[in-house]
Every structure is written in C-alpha cells, then in structure tokens.
Length: 144
Image 1 (tube, helix red, strand yellow):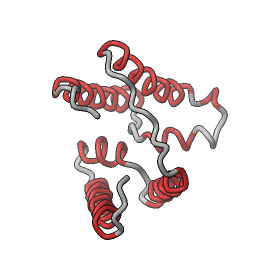
Image 2 (cartoon, helix red, strand yellow; image 1 turned 90 degrees about the horizontal axis):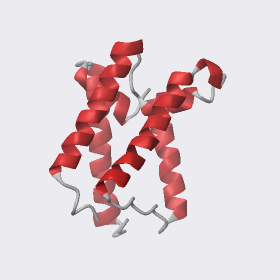
Image 3 (cartoon, rainbow, N blue to C red; image 1 turned 120 degrees about the vertical axis):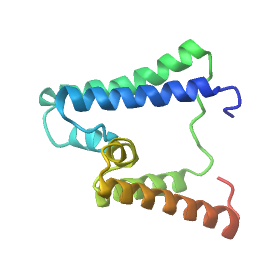
Image 4 (cartoon, rainbow, N blue to C red; image 1 turned 180 degrees about the horizontal axis):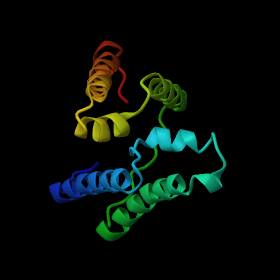
C-alpha cells in the first residue's frame, strides 16, 4: 500500500508536524492536540476560533499538497466493515475525552514537553492498541 513512500516523505512529514506544533505553541501558546482543537469548534462561535479553523484546514491542505506534489494516490477510505468503523470511532472519541487528549496532543506535544501525564497517556494508548490488534487478529481471527 505505501511501498513507494520513501523515508524522506516520512521524515519530512514528521518535521512539518513538529514545526506546526512548535509554531502554534510559540505563536499563541496553544497545544496542537487535534481532538481538542476539533471538539472546541463545537463549543463556541466560529468567529472567535479562526486559528482552529485555519489549523484544521491546514491539515487537509497539507495532505492534498503532498499527494499533488508527490504523485502518490490518496489511500482509499476503509469500507469493509462500517459498523466496526463506527464503533471504533466512538471508542476513540470516548477515549480522547476520558484521557483529556489524543495522540497528537499527548504523543507529540506532551512528550516533547516532558509531561508525565502525556507520557503515561501515550504509553497507555500504545499498549491498548497493541493488545487490541493482538486480540482482533490472533484471538478473534479478524483481518482488518
């Protein structure tokens, strides 16, 4: 699926994510936690949250720009098990609310600030993901 994506693409993408997080924190003192940014758009009028809209539009524009410049096709949306995707999405939403953040806020921004809470949260995300995939693939025998 991603065989033709080089390490340069991966390193460049990681560097751009880090740069975006750094600029957001240095510029307006906000953490680049995508779930928090997206969820907060539902809580207040859009006109007071222009930076959030621009940040989220930048995520979409960045992906579009990558695929346009590199010639890489955009991955197809998963469609093999819609109920499982919906359940997974709801569980991720619940988990981000319960963990007070998501992998971008805790894993990228929190760990880079040496936040103990973010380190524990990210380790919890990773351990649960590993356990879930083991159970789904090897215990239940599903291929997702």
